[in-house]
Length: 98
Image (cartoon, rainbow, N blue to C red):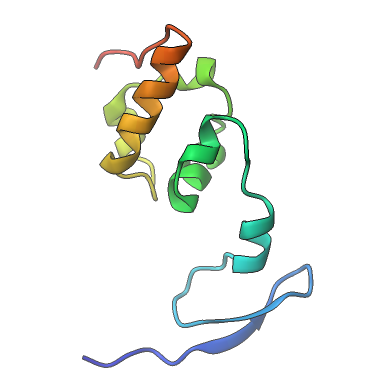
């Protein structure tokens, strides 16, 4: 198995980092923008970005989606669903049914 060579990149904020994948996300910027309080803080970075890119930034918006809808989002996997179910349950909300 051949490993891709890591290349030095610079993000638009001037951070330099090495990456071997085609993912354009700067790890320094990503670390600085992690939420600390809301339901998004409980998710992995790819799952959080998937929701943010879909415009899902509140629990009320999240409740308008089914679990299958979320699983279709790029970067969102089944491991995030239990965390979101619990966050919704705390506010007496739930996912829509398919």
